[in-house]
Amino acid sequence: MAKQGKDSKLSKKKGKKRPSPQDAREPDWANGLRQLYDSVVDEPLPDSFNDLLDKLDDDSKST
Image 1 (tube, rainbow, N blue to C red):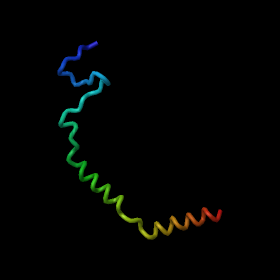
Image 2 (cartoon, rainbow, N blue to C red):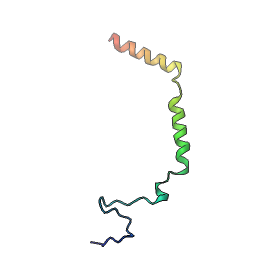
Image 3 (cartoon, rainbow, N blue to C red):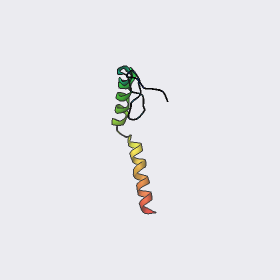
């Protein structure tokens, strides 16, 4: 078994690599991707989609 020195990047408890400060930082594109996702989630559903959902609900209730 290899001896772990104080410079080892392995955690003594879990044996996992500790992230360096640079690894812990989010990539530059992550913030832009998060903003894009949030803008899509916040978009309202189109009326035609809402109408389709209503029709499907009505059909399932009558069956």
